[in-house]
Length: 114
Image 1: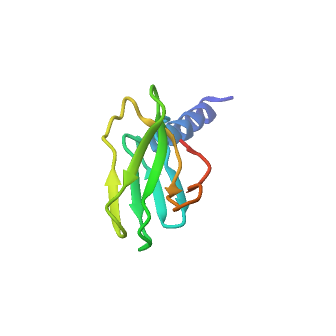
Image 2: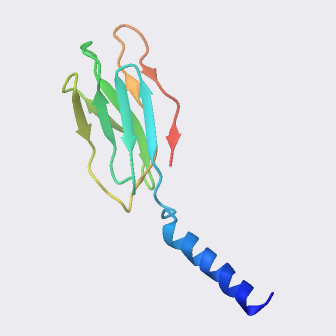
């Protein structure tokens, strides 16, 4: 490989590295019924929206990098969104969305991973 080819390879590699998304960032999204859960960018927090005027709560189960078994409930009603606390060092690594069902098991999505 001559010098011009090496420079071209380095330029392309450098441009790719500058435009790449950081490895720790990864968008997660889950939706079922009137429940939508997501975590974007550095995944510091989780958001849960209730989009259906059905009187049922929505929630997300989620795990962070070093802790598991978290739940974020939206009890605020249709058209609202609630947010978890933010911690980018103990980032969210997986989440789901769940729609509460009266007198039946709740409907939940599969896991969305970062």
